[in-house]
Each structure stands twice: as structure tokens, then as C-alpha cells.
Image (cartoon, rainbow, N blue to C red):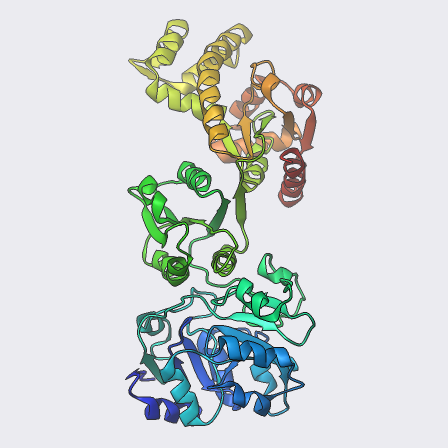
Length: 538
């Protein structure tokens, strides 16, 4: 299909495409919409095909003024006309009872329909000239970030639709606010370009917020408006949202960044992420700019090699509710909240190798805690601390090849000699504990909710006495043997020697306040760990 490029002067041509049952991308003040004759079921079906959009996801009917409401809706409350007088044309969609002339393919099978009068004069002119309401969801491939320029639309829809009308960049940048007026009081179904506070001021009532705004809908729940049920706005790399005091959130993200991390941050903190793929969202207080930039920022990363994205999130006042909703939907509501108002919890995690600590620690990290891996600290110090290497070389000279430690040679020494193992532990603890203390205090200053100390020698190290809670991760020995062999690529004999050199699971269980037993069902074990850590961080 040849996709025509139109300008805002091509009103008649745009109307012809709509009347002929074609698809036309149109500019609005919020985002670009993918328009079709909303009363033509076959034309509407083409929208779903072009976008790859689920057909139970309702569409919005766009009209040129409030005088068209009676044509397509009935039992219209007075509040609808009050809101239209205050905010139309503008970024407000009202859910009303649909007349029979509105196809159910347009409403997603519902007996209600979303009505909106867009602010862009060219789009209103196309609707007026075509003489039909235009169904127009955002003009992006379903699930991807919405389009705020004609070029964005071209990238997603070239060859799939009849035309794209270029009306310049969108002024608002997030979709319309959706308000359900079939209930009393009205309910906010989707935050958008019209802040909730302004609606409440006009109506003179407090407007409740549907739970789908702040959390994923449950399986089987039916969406009452566009964008409620599905993960939206998502780039290819997974997104994690970090909300809370901006400086603390930025510091948290900085510590999590790897070589292939992408970052969406407020302008004030961009310098923290030098050398990474960064998209500036706007200033902390500049929500108008944040709204215009949020979709461009999400789309940007699909042209990079990032494997994960961290995003700062504005507070929920004004446009912040809509911006945060879009970022969180991109993340599938995977959100970490950083607070500097509570005492940081220190949780010690220990247990023998191969028991499943990695799975448990992943759950603790997802709750916003910093993980300090004592073994990783040890290996970092091996490459950076001359003092540690001098101490080890003096005690285990045969384990060194010049100035380089041969870890396997060291293992062969200590795994068969309890005295040598005790000496090794003593040397390591002295240096690792000092570095661990430094990292704990850095995390405390950053306002993190908690720190997990992963240390096989936690008990008796001194750090366990400082912990608010200690957790033992245990598993059957045979399961541990198979895990170690697969994980480290070693023989069964060597795996068993490592297990035999460590204290038994019963030791860790007896000396810790809490025990997580891993029987091999990873999903069940992960859920068990998340529930425990959630309770311990309170």
C-alpha cells in the first residue's frame, strides 16, 4: 500500500480517505491518532489490523463540537456539557452511553463510547468535512510508545494505511484524560493531558481514580476505556520505574547501571549517567516538557543496544499522574519506590552454595533494596587491594602465580584443611567487612529502604549482629550438587568437595531468624522469598 503524505492544507483529501473507508493518521494536541469512519465497522476493523490492537480495547469517537454528542450518545448528564464548555476542544474524553448507530466494534463490545473534541484545527476540519465521527486510537503499533510526530507515525504505519497528515509535533504529548460519566460521581479511567485537579475544580466534587491507573488489571477484567487492560507504550528493552525523592531515585539508578543500561531522568541528574544512553525527561518541576518528551524518550531506546531501562517518575500532581501512568505501563507496573523518610533495614542473607540465594536476592532487589555480595566484594578487592593480596600471599604462597592468585589452587588447599580455611576466612573478613561497612553507609545516605548482605560467612562475621534480620537459604544437598555442577561447569567430585568444606544447612537454619527452604520449585520459592522480604522491609 502506498501511504500518502498530507499537509494540514489537504483537508478535502483527508476527508475523502475517511469517507472511502480508509485509514488516515491525524495530528491532535495530545498524540497522533489513527483515524477511520467510526460508524463504518469494516473501516474500524482495519484500525485494529493496522495496529495489531486487541479488538476488546475500545476506541474513541472524535467530533468537531459538543453539538454532535446527541447524535451518538443518549442519557447525557449535565456534567458532560459543563465539562465540554470548560475543556473542549481539548484533551478530555468522556465515556457516555452509546446509541445503536455506534458499531460495537468501535466500543470494544461495550454499550458505552468515549467522546472527544480534539484541539487541532486541521483534524476538526477533516471531521467536519467528512461528516462522520472519526475513531482514532494513537497511531502507533499496539504496545509501542505513542507517536508525537508524523515521522513517528511513518516509522510504525508506512505501507499499512492510506495517509498521514503532518501537523507538526504534538503540543501536549500524552493522550487525553478519560472520565467515565455513566457513574456518579464521575470516575477517572485514564489520566492524561487534562489534569484531574482541573476537572474536580469545574465539577466541584472529588473524582475517584480507577485502580487500573495505578496497577495492572486482573486477568478477565474488561477494559472500560482505551489503554486500561494492556501493557502500553513499551520499548523493546524492559523498563523499571524508580519513584520517590528525585535525588535519591537518581542515586539508586546510578548504582544499578551497567554498560548496556538506558536511563530516562530529569534534566538535573543527567550528568550522573555520563557514558550511558540517556534521555532527558525535562526538569523536575517542568511537567509540560515531561509530557511532551515521555513517548519520544521511550521510543528512542529501540534504536540502541540497551538491554534494560531505568526511568525516573514525577510526583502524581497535575500532569505527573498521566506521565507516571504512561511510564509505569511501559514497565508493566514494575516500580520501585525510594523513600528517605524511614530507617533502612539491614537484612543478612546466608546459606551454603547452590541453595538458591540468587533467586531470593532477585526478589529483594525488586523491592528496592541494595544487595551487597560479600563474595563479589572479595573478588573486587582481589583486583584492587594490594593489602589484601599481600596478606593472602603471605599465608598461601603456593596459591599465587607471580602476583596473580590461582583461585582453584587456593580452593584445593583450603577445602581439605580446616585450619587453612579458617585462616582464609579470617583474612577475607577483615577486608571485606570494612568495604561492606562503607557500602552500607552509602546506601543509608541514599535513602534506600533496605540492604541485603549476601555472605556465606555471615554468622560470626560481626555483620550479622548489626542486621535487623537474618535469613538462611537452604536446600537438599543433592539438589545443590546438581546446581553447582550446571552453574560452574565442574565435576561432581569437585562440587561435592565444595559442599563438604562448608557448614551444613542445619547450621544456617539454627543461627538465623528466618529460613527459606528451596525444594526446586523456583516460582514457589521466589514467591515465598518476596513475601518474607516484603514483611521484613516494613
